[in-house]
Length: 192
Image (cartoon, rainbow, N blue to C red):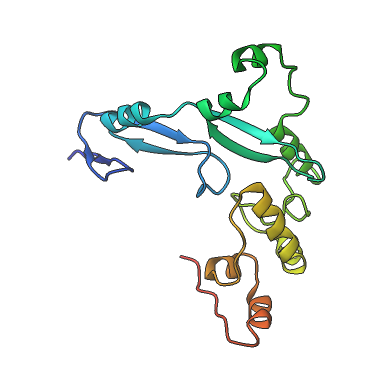
């Protein structure tokens, strides 16, 4: 007896009947937790994504007084319109190479002992990431929640919410949530 594997589009739920699905790797999205993810889609859906694509400029803003850059995305024509002295093509051709790659530098800064990333620092705690939340990160988040949320907001990341049962469980925040709620009972829902 044989088996037949049926694949479905992650976007539409339709059966992929033409054999090989198209693959989309999502590098950045407001709801993306950290590392890139990939989905399988119908080839026509991938072509529709390509057709709907908008030319963009992805920038890291290093503002005075900020410890970390802020990543922003603009439509390319909107960025081009900001260049009033020199056309953007000429500006980019004559610009110096970047001194620091944000992702590489952030990865290096996040490295603790050995080669394992540490998320129990002010620069990294609370960032969405794959893997388990250590007790050290939980403790750090409990002790510095407001400062961490300020940093996450500046980075354009999701905030850690004391109203979100998943966040309460992930970071062991039941006590802090109850304290800030004025003693009201706050229960964490077990993870699925």
